[in-house]
Image 1: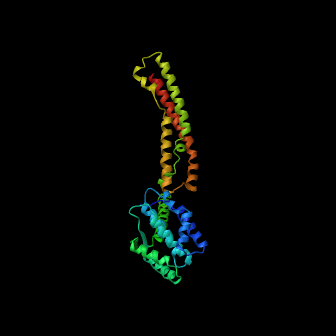
Image 2: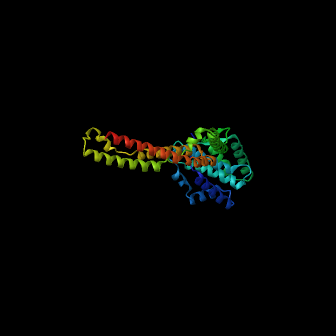
Image 3: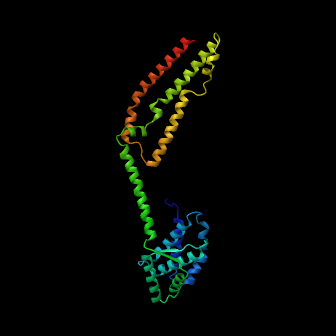
Length: 292
């Protein structure tokens, strides 16, 4: 299962911290610590998520390590190393989360230490030595930052494939008609509600008249109908629309222009359906009158 955390604000904070160090044109670790403390950067963990902490920490580490690639300036690479060290040392988690390093990233660190020695920056080799002695690294072949981007890209491709497959599956099929069916319009819901209401009123009047001349006890339940046919159909239409909207949301399938045109053409048959329904209700009324 993929993890969905918005880490952009954390990464932006790291970028701004390292950028400020670079702007000072310093290579000193004490200068770095001063900037860290002025920004109260240890408070970054106050906003940490309550779940997926390992993913959270490795994302911070990987983003920081990204500042130490060979194409970066020497002060920026030093800022990345200093930031990585401080992120590890100030984390509140016990046991602390180790820093995952790919072999390529390890090579970049090795080159940085050699460059620092050449520039007589003693802090960088000392910090690396200390981190190695404390066994803070986990070594592997995979670059986490690039892997995360690849996984995200593959997930997007999968989503597009699912949407495309759904469109091809339902295109030009009878199923598509039902997926985009406007049940309320197909059933002539408004007219049906009107007719069922009129029928209920007519039935009630007929029963009231019949009570005056016959014993209605055996058919009393006819006068106590709790829900009209139109209301029942309206609930069915609402349920249909809700399920259809959920399907649209999950698959991304939407009514096509051709389908919409077909639905418009079907309006011509609605009048015929309504007349037929009205005739059936009229026949039912006549049968009731004959029984009475």
